Image 1: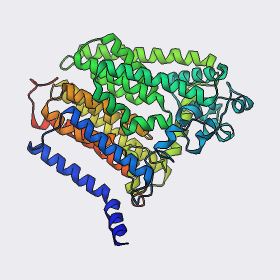
Image 2 (image 1 turned 90 degrees about the vertical axis):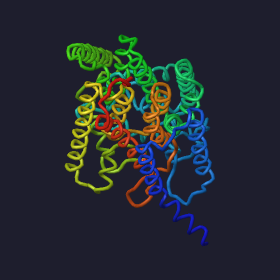
Image 3 (image 1 turned 90 degrees about the horizontal axis):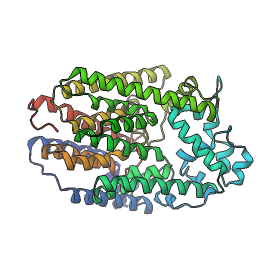
Image 4 (image 1 turned 135 degrees about the vertical axis):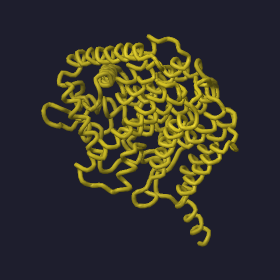
Length: 460
């Protein structure tokens, strides 16, 4: 009895202990007393912690109310019966979206292909929002084209739902494996596929976040190497067309101390981005006739409204952290809070851009800060989007100096390990607070460079 009480006290305050460790880590880093591990040992360290937490979740070691995966544990990834997918909403981020297209499917078609009953008759993405808008229109044009093509592929294939998704998943895993293998090393491969964001991505079926991760990785790698400039534009256009918050990474196109060249590059990028998405809008007139930019905005507002009061816990946005602290319930105040956080973070990005333009921040750290801001500035932002962090770890080992490694690797490791998504206290969530604190501290550490050094000789 005394042992169980003692264990409960330890684990209920685990969040506090981890924050203390983060603070101590920062102090040691600033004092220069902390030496970073090599990549092999770093990946091994993160993997051991992750495997322990996965095991603890499976056998329910900790007296904590919460889950590592959404309504489930790691075993749900092994569910091959499509009629069971709805039990834990397994693979729902991909499947429920394209299954909601009533302009493609009839209900009896879906029943015959093994679609769970709840995903046919209680699919929230089928909700009518007025003005011809449907909830599934919350996706940007290119993402909607992607899902409409997936829907038609499923409709005309001879595969049931489980077979079709696993084929989609195998193609994704194979392509991502080859891209990462050819551009990194075996340690990065292992870290990428074993990290929590990657496994959560698979459990939710959010394949697009994985696609975006490699698009961003190749884009940033090329920026650091200063090569393939035309390919870079195309990669960023694709990534930002899936996730518009990634437009922030276009600031990497700016050439330090060369205003004319910077304006030229940004003009080319944004004109190409707008043209590409306009072409997707035209294509959607044939694939999804009722889709329009106005309906996209209505759908996006529906999505954010559904998460404005209570998220599902799998969110790392700054809005969710501040709201839970202040316990704001008024809708107008919630929207004002979202806007204030967005404006503040845009201001931070502009400040970092100024420092980068004056060559006081290395490109590598500037890119890491921009990516972090792109995550914490919007809400909701699913934890599967954190999968790119595993690739940033490789970039830091490949291009970063000792100072860069000491400053950032532990924080990035904290993001990659699995954490319980629960209410530790009434309004506190392990994953939300640890992930957001790590991302904010990452941005802070990048911004602090300009205060301690103006020497640009070691800028990458």
